[in-house]
Structure formats: structure tokens, C-alpha cells
Image (tube, rainbow, N blue to C red; front, side):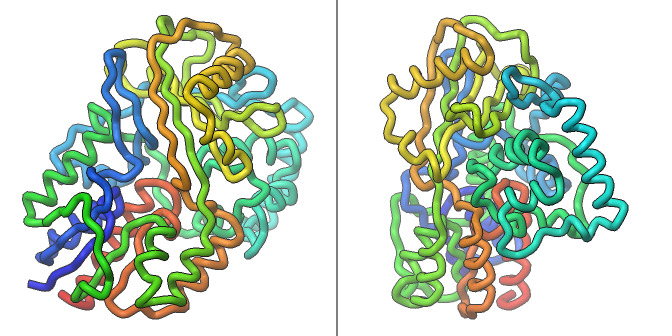
Length: 402
């Protein structure tokens, strides 16, 4: 039986280990921290659960298959979650004025008449420039900007249009069918994954470090780009240098539990465009998303980004004061706070900028025998995209070593 070593026990490492074990490989995972899951996790409080990072994954065919394999009952979203708000002085479901809407439709319509390929992004073009060219200034600021920063935790000014939009031009794309998570949150998914791969004989070594020179056979590095850079520094210095060039961005998630629910805006959440002198990127209205999950009303507030790195240094009291001010500015609410959970993730996510675009191209030009890279700096930010790459890597290893 061929052995494969996986470094990293986040969602990427666990899912690629699952696929490899199912093919009959002997798999060992080395994880530097004391738990599996990476950014994913769920805190239990007397008032309900608080997700540490992502609260669900996109409901693709492969995601549904994964839940079935793990014997995990999926929690789907409530009808109320279909309503989504964007802030423009007040939260609204359509933030453009009548004139801006007309200009947006005319501009986009003229592009589509000439063919979808006219919208294809150019290499080394920022998402902000692409948006202004193809959608207009208002639609870029109030539609594209909030949507993208809700995913990539940064504004449009530095994001790569090619990395983010080019996959949308692929002929194979599933229709969006919502989200799914475990009944007890994302920790349910991690727990079931860990249980499943252990049952298949996968060995997981927590609080463990490892050197590439000490390993035989194929290795999957399923860590952040920074950690992958350190691991490959001696054996693959050129690869390490490229990985080190990838910039990382910090993320803060704060779940606030209140005595009473705000009822003015019942929906999935509210995204905040830049330019309003507000630090928050978005608000998740958790109690309106999933059924029977909360004991009291709660929201998760997301902050961070390259241009707001200083926010991660704020104390709990400073952060809560800031959010109380912004909650009143956005939702006009001053409700009594019952509890809170703050998660600070230093250098948590890859910055999907033009540097990463070049780095991905350079990585593809380097041959690394027996070494496979895996992570959200390669496959896109999103658990479903990571799951797709896990399947791809497992197929590649199976074809080469099976």
C-alpha cells in the first residue's frame, strides 16, 4: 500500500486525506495545532452557537455527496435568507437609483449584445478597473464591491479580476442552489470528517511538525501559503520564494447576542460598500439564515482587509465600542448585548491581488516531484472550491502512484 503524507488538517487536508484513503492509500496527517479544522470551528454559548469563520458551504453536488458519505444531516437555509441587503444610507435590497439602474442595464446590455467574451477580464487588471469599464461606477461601488469584499475580505482596488472572474467563463458551472452546514454548525462537518478518515485508517498527528526531507513518497502540503513557503524553503527554494510573495490578509469575526431581535431587516445579512467611513465589511444575520440554531437573536460582524490591518490590534472593549457605533449607523439599533464571541485571525486569508495572480502562474511553471500544493490561495476562497481541488489532487496521485 502506497503511503501519502498530508501536512495540515484544515478542510483542505481532511478532504484530500478522505479521497486518498478511499482509493486505498495509507495516509498520515501532520497538524501543527492542537485541533483539526483550521479556520473552521463552532463555539457553543448559553445563547446559541458562534461560528469562528465560514458559517456554511455552497450546496454543490459534490458538497451534498460529502455530507451523505459522512452520514451528516445537512441544515439548509430558511426562506428569509433569500433577502440580502446592501447599505446605502440604509440597508436596501437594491442600492442603485433609478438613473443608475438604467445606466447599468444599458452598459451591461450593450456588452452582452456583442457577446459574453467582451466581459472577459484581462490579466493583471484590477477588479475595480474591470467593474468601472463594464458596469459603471455606481454598480461597481454598490453591487460588485460589496459582493466581492464579502468573499475576499478586501475592497476592489487591489483584487485581481482575472483570478476572481475568469472561472465564471468556464462552460461547466452548477446553478447556485443555496448553502448547507451541519445541525451544530461547521464543527459538525469537521468532527464527522475526522471520524470518517480515522475509520479509514488515516493517522492524525496533532501538535506535530515535520520536515520534507524526512518524508518518503508523495506529500500534499495543505496549509497557508506562508506555512508552505517555510516547509519548502530547503528542498524547493524557488517554489518557497514564490509562495513567500503571496500576501495575506487578516480577518475578524464578532458574533453578538442580543436580548431582542431587530425586525426591520430580516434576511441573510447586509454588505457595506466602502466610502461610508465604516470599518465593517458585512453583517450576517444568523438567526434569519438557519432554522433552530439559536436560543436568542445574534449577528456576526466581519472586519479586516489589507487596508485595515490595525483593527486586529483592538482590544475586546474597543472592538465592541466600534461595533456598537457602526450598528447604530447601519441598522439604527441600540439593543442590550447578552454575550459576544470574537475571533481574530492574523494573516488568515490570501489576498487575491495581482501579485497572487502572477504567483499562481509562476507556481504552475515549477516541477516538484512527489509534492502537491493545496489551499485557498490556489483553488479560490470557498469550501466547495477547496473540495473540488481535493478531488483533483487525489485523482492525480491515484493516477501516478496507484
